[in-house]
Image (cartoon, rainbow, N blue to C red; front, top):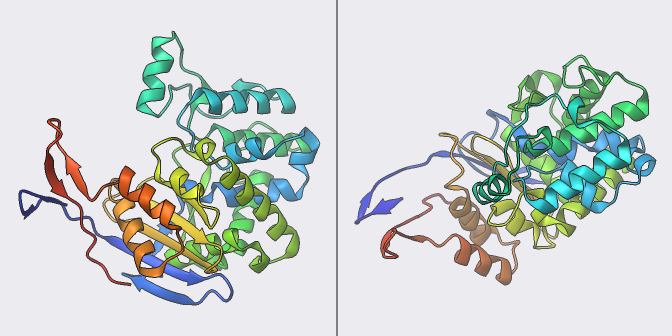
Length: 325
């Protein structure tokens, strides 16, 4: 980032671009084999096992509900209404969620909610949809609802197994830590995460047909309801408006997307954990490898202009990506 003709900030990181067909590393900046925690980018893949067991059919879950299973929601009224509908359809109790009551994570959503007299709720946690999905699945399977976030719970063991399989990451390549919401979270080579999203975009390259069909349903739901997945002004939601792209953000600098026509997956990890640099990195990647429509590129340029303004609406500086794939 430049201000007044001088460099103010430098954000370093790694990028991996992988073929969904054979897992071959096509392009890389930095070490594509170094481990990265997948964080919330894993949510669509975490839902695959529950769909394979018929969770959606058992509770009558529709595309909008599936989009919330993959969501890092901001707390909008529309998102909360879908989450409340999941509670009603599954018969789950909000208090069963192993997360703390909170306020909407989105600033505008939080201000509107508080101004209307809203109080902290567990359902307002940004990962509430993922938690509800695993609770509904556990209820269907007869597994304990207590302790559903523990690594030794049957649901979590199956999720980790599926993630390794989906990303073609060997057990010794995967480290399991604890996510911010309490779930186990995998760390794997960045190239493996790119492969996972390449397959999410092109599920015909899945490890097995049933898993591919489940992943295809998740990806279709994300594209059908992009603003439920994250929210207005969010990079992933903007990209999901493009029918060729499946995208999701994760905490602490991780972002990933798959391109259907190109049959590739792309993952990036910003070393300092910031997300402010994502749009400019993603724009530079898409300009170099293609995959986004001209309309999508125009939206990116409008929403995330390379030039930024100060409070007086004057140009204060600019962003510039300096890598070459």
